[in-house]
Length: 202
Image (cartoon, rainbow, N blue to C red; front, top):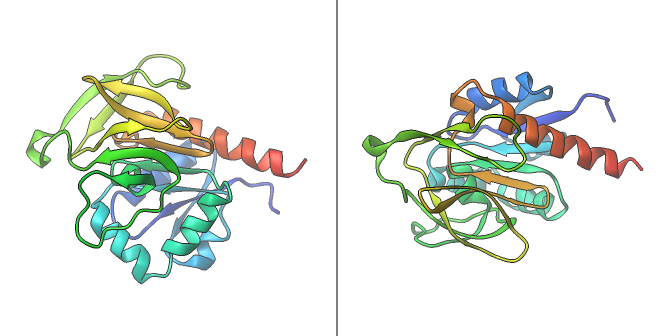
């Protein structure tokens, strides 16, 4: 195995380029992932924002859904933002017809909970595990978490709603930290991925 820590970004739809930039700034080798073979070569994966129904359907079409589920079950570190949070939910409160999720976090998520595109906003969010000032969260048609199970840890709330969750090696935020130039949430995920790889090498 190479010494370089390789983290993929699911590159089916959404703001892939911004995540690749943020991961590189946080010290990882960042690669787009579109095929099962590419997924097999990464230490961790980011599922970006975009349109969760489209990402779900494309993941099935590209033969990625089952390999994704298998790797997440096996403990691969994974981070989902906005639509990516929906993809990591074990249950969606209001799924579109035929919409599937990867799962991995014991949470129930409500799609577009903070409003439509023209109701997008930014807000300072205190995220547990991210040192320093609050993270500037960009909320674009963002979901929120209705509830979490016993295995999931709430890392942040905004306006009384859960907006960041972690369960084991899975991390999810309803906002977009990759759009602000602040790479601290990505650094947290890079640290999670590095710790998982170090544990496997013992």
